[in-house]
Length: 315
Image (tube, rainbow, N blue to C red; front, side, top):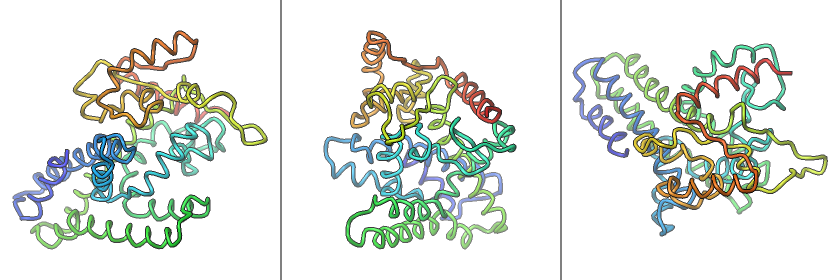
């Protein structure tokens, strides 16, 4: 995945681009590699599950920074908020959407939401370009206000680090190609955006179909801020697996088709999810707990589309 991401960019930056079509092919190929790094490398590494050695996890976690995002912000957003408060509106950052999207039946509704199942794909595609420009800074400011950056000078230090990493990323992914490739600048910028569109679409669909489904629940805390039930049951009720029998697909997306197992055991490397999924399913059945799974990715996307349509119409 690292080669799939970097090799096309190297070819672009040493001016091996002979036509606009080749430029777009190289950038889009790099976008597929970027998605692979996000799902198959940094995701496990930042969870501390890629390796038994935490230094390995730490340095592989920096692959998140190499693709323009930030490991520290992701760790708070994903490991802390999403995994702790899955599908709880206002707490799970993965369903805290802008006003034109509604990912929870408890979120505020407007007339635009009736059409979100049609236009959501555009915003999924734009998600990573937003991420590598402004979203990390916006989230870091919010996390500081939430008290999630409690070390002395943590906010200032992270702002400096984020800025430095993003400067590095934009340097080799966009600025150097603009200086080196003898094509119109608008073509290079459009090809760069197409890379991010592919990455955003792939990552967003894989992560969102795991939780925004007709069968998943969206619990609310009581007036004291307490969510009923235990954490493990909550993860099973709010998460869906898909395409469990496709080894190739599972490899391509870093085992994220086994989202139930991942949410229950995030400290275990994704290569083991298939082997433990039968145990999890049997145990859930033994105790009468839902174990959501879809036979294929196509069915999962179709049901996700249905959930978005339903959320757009529901009061």
